[in-house]
Image 1: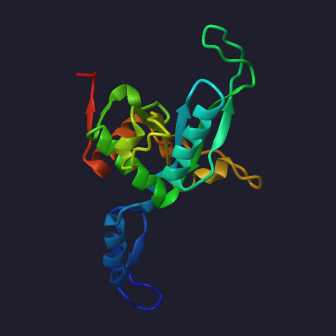
Image 2: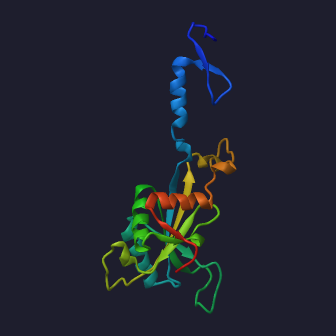
Image 3: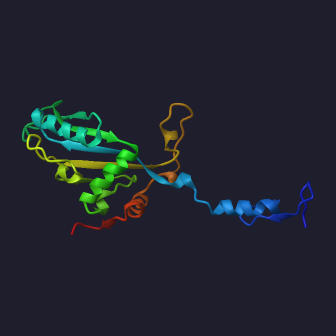
Length: 205
C-alpha cells in the first residue's frame, strides 16, 4: 500500500493516472457525476421582426405593437435596394425589429410557441444552433385588439449559446470557440424538446 507524506493511505483514482488520498477519493468521484454547467444551453437573445413593406402610418403602428409587447423602443430597418414591383425604394424604412434578452425573452418565446402549439419543423432550425418561426396575428400573444392599430404578424428569431462564447467577441485576449462547444442543430432541437416539451416535425402536416 502506498502512503502519502502525512501517512494516510493512497488509492488509485479510476478516471485518472494518479494516486489520491483515500479521504478525498469519494469527493473526487462524486464531482465526476456532477453536471458540467458550461455545457448548458441558454437563450442569448431573441429578435422580433415585423416587416410592413412600406413606410408611414402602418410602420408606426407596427412599432407601437412591438413596444407594447416588449416594453422596449424598436429599431427601424431600411430597404437595401429599390424594388418597383413591391413599391419600395432604397433606404426607405420598411420594417421594425427589437432585440430582447434575459427572462423577458423566455417569457415572450413561451407565448409565441404557445401560438404554434409547441410544434416546429426541422427546417426552422439552422446548422449554427439557432431557430425561428412566425405568427400571423399579434393578438394571439395576449395583446388586446385595437381597431386603430390593426393586426400584424411578426417573426421570432432565437439565438442559442453556451457559457464562454464571449471569448470570440471580446477585444482583449480574443480566442476561438472550440467545435465541440458550439451549438449544433441537433443540440438546438434537443434543447427545444427538453425545455418546452415541443414537437419537431420533418415536414408540415
